[in-house]
Amino acid sequence: MIRSVYLDTCCVIYLLEDVPPFSEQIRKYMTNNTDAVLCVSPLVRLEALVKSIIDGNTALMTDYEFFLADQQWLTIGDAEFDRALTFRSHHQDIRTYLEPVCFAGFRVEYGELVWGDYELCFSVIDLYRNTIEHDQLMTKAA
Image 1: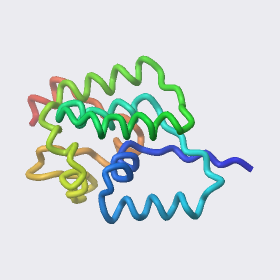
Image 2 (image 1 turned 45 degrees about the vertical axis):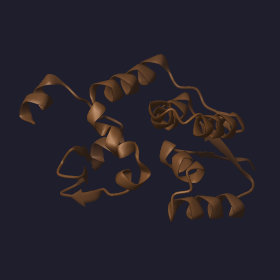
Image 3 (image 1 turned 30 degrees about the horizontal axis):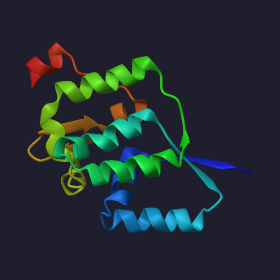
């Protein structure tokens, strides 16, 4: 039986940038599950490449491209891709959290994942339901 395992962007970043202890855990999983087919999407590619493009790190961009090319690709619809692009372009302050060490520094408070002094905050239930929205009402409330 073939098992498909979706690699979230964080997994790809931690693995290729060798971020302990996450990279060791991912490698251990891959070693113990050689029958698993690793899957990625264009969104993973977008998210993984952003920081290396901003930093001009062509060696890391190449590492990502070679690694991603070896995985099974899942499709993503234009609407989902556009939502992700809009979210990232409207929230440029999240660049700090593209650093794996900064990203890993979240805490859970009252059912929300929180980074820093609420510079970045997501409701766990919204993440679970994949219903993260940003609109003018939320901007005014913040």
